[in-house]
Length: 447
Image (cartoon, rainbow, N blue to C red; front, side):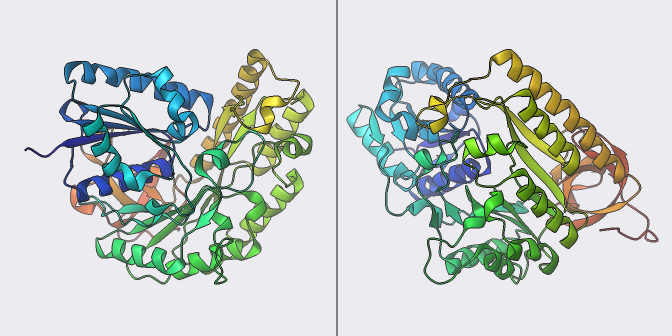
């Protein structure tokens, strides 16, 4: 019998990308072979996100498009995994009765077993129970040949219960991995030539709270900073209330910790932040930004903003704009509020109409474009350290990589530089990237 081939289509954040890598590891261990096109697959898995209504809609649309492969190949297994699978469970069959497999966030380690069950039974298989331990967070995934960066899960789940957010309901409560297992995984990655690791968690800087050995996120970052071969450390995502002085000081103490933090503020209005159950004020947030910039003057700060949260007045919205103008974020992700089933905010009165939300999000995005261009133009003429990741999408002559502050840089170079840390002179600034050239030996890097 020929080996079966699988294809994974991933929606959502870096954590979902890493979940897909872990599923692929489980499947390859069981003899399944990955392919890079659904046309070649015997098994198609859609790893879904349910954080926003738009993400759900996109996932349903993609699953519907994959139906044609089942029509052409009746034996094909079509599975839905991740947050949307966890959210809908057995009800998923009402939306898509042709789906064979529904696997929730705590059951990725069973993916091969569940596929075999679906093949044998030829009836839909659903597994969405929560478990005391999420086994998949400890699986090591060998990086692809030539990879220079990798994701490492350090914790999963969330205990915050923000009024708009489904994560605690879909990912479960917080669980931190043991530090020794994390460090061993990163040493293995370094052995495969990985230069940069991104530490992942739904609320990454609350790492250690579920452990009994006194582990903390700041301590973990410092320990990773001692691992030979790892030249860059990043992490995501942070909750402002859990950003301690110890974590902030790591930006000054740990040489390999990159000068970038994603710190979602969501709103600049204390009234809205309280309704959101964020447990900090705008002033609290600004104080932490000030501390970050005192420790690391050139730190890049990015954020998330939700517009149109129930009850958000024009005054509330203007306070968000004022905060943006004060912080001047490097970039941000902006979202129109949408009800998420099961969250507290669905019951809130004073929903904002779609027209007002569209107008407000355009104001946020237009202002952020100004701030991003301001930040990018300020880098023109400087020399930045760039980790070369691969070919640019725009030109076969160009390589692409990122600065320590997480800015994309394209420059003319050859493929033998992939994986190297190189100096690049920044010549031009665009909204989403920078353009540079390799400097002469006389020029001195400014990073």
